[in-house]
Length: 199
Image (tube, rainbow, N blue to C red):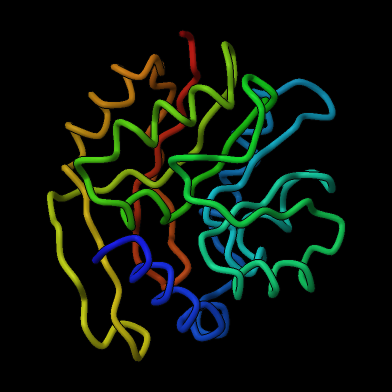
């Protein structure tokens, strides 16, 4: 899928995804692990925020939510009206260098082609700066596919595998702090990575 096709897919599926997923769960609780690593009153950027119920609503009030789809941002504006919202590709974030203390990317990076994942992690590092902390889904397998019939539409998924993802993060300057497992919004067990950008 080309970027405009992925964006169009999310425009069509954002509401269905928000309606079908559980806004609570153990992966939402992992946000406390991220916040424990951040200073008081942190600036947090939530990548792929969607409707905001799972992550953005559990972050500090003035956090920044970024999504590829305007539909998701409209939902987030209702769910978390105090959040700052921006429509953008995660490879080109509309955020200044080294302004964020933390960054969340739940079930987001694997919607970008795996060949571009190093670009994503480099952009995350740019926004975080030294000492910033990332909490992201850690894909267990290696795949690149379009799932037809997903949420009644189709969606692109791509990942290089667990070990390669951790290697890419280290190459981008991240130190791996933990790889906890939690329940994802659709009820499956998912591994996450908590990592600090050390430059």
